[in-house]
Length: 270
Figure 1: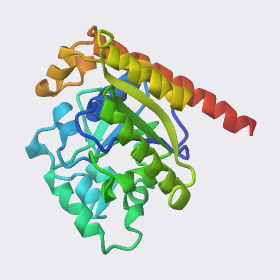
Figure 2: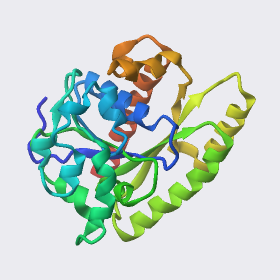
Figure 3: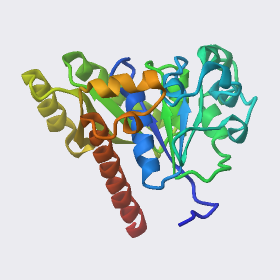
C-alpha cells in the first residue's frame, strides 16, 4: 500500500562513539532487511569514512553529491540520493570531505539542526531513514541525534563497551533535554556475539539487567561471511542470505518492526 504523501518517515540514528562495533554493518543490513519487506528506506552515510557507501557498491567517482553538500545546504535530499542495487533502498553517500563539515558548521546559525532541516524535504516518501553516524560524539553525531526520532545502538560484547555506552546514553539524554524532546532509545543490539566466550555472556547479562527491554532479543554473531560482504560492495543479506549474520539481521528487522507497531498502537491509544 502506498503511504500518504503527508506521512513522515521514521528517522533512526545508528550511533556508537566507538569504532569497530558493527555500526555500519548494522545500518546496511538492517536497511536491506527492511527493504526486503517492502519498506522504502534511505540510508544517510554520515561518516566521513564512507563505509556504508562502499558496502552498497557506490564507488568514489560516483559520489558527486553527498551528505557534505546536504548538511551545508548546498544540495537537497532529492539531488543527493542515489539508487542502490537493492530494490527499495537508496543512499546519500559520504566522502572524506564530510570531516570538514564539523568545522564549517561551527559558525553557522542553528548548527545542530542542519540535518533536521535538510530532511524536512521527503521527495521519495520513505518509510525509514537510517543515519550511519561517525564513531565520535561531535557535531555530526549531534545533528543526527537532533534529526532522529530514535537511536539504535550497536554494542560490541566487550568490557570497555559498557563504559562507552553509559557516556553515549548521557549524550542522548542531554540532546533530548535541550535539542530534541522526542528523542528516545529504540534499542541496543549486541554485536560480535560469541556464545563460546563466557565474557560475552557476562556482558549480555549486565546490559540486559541494566537496560531491560531496551536490549533487542536478536543478537548479531561474529561471522566471516559478513566481514567479506563489504569488499564485494554488497550487504551480507545479498552476498550470503543464509549465513548466520544475515539471518540475525532478518530477525532484528522483524523485532524492530514489531516494536514500531507496538509504539504506533500506544500513540493511537494516547
